[in-house]
Length: 143
Image: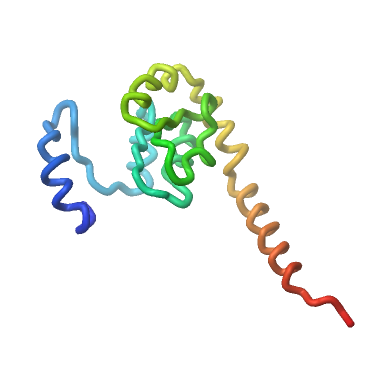
């Protein structure tokens, strides 16, 4: 389902584009369906227009070898390595121009690079380092 706050926009701007041939509405998917969609995707279009703090969907796509095309907004430039795992730009026209380059990226390379940056082990280790530095910073020296 569409978020209630987005319902009017969806009905006015998106629903008229859904023709069942070139544009389909799938709605929410479970993990298995998500993997199937990403497996067959040429690229993930992520035209985000708000300051997404992390963007797990980009990492999920890259972990499946799918390059990301996104607006440079929020965490996009921190997650997508331009020219390696996808591309980002400031406008729709710039993104359109980047599609052929994204499709030329090696899917195995996209996947391997994403795994090298965002594996469970690496993420857990990074969180532990942050927690340890915070704890160390709050310890008072012995008198």
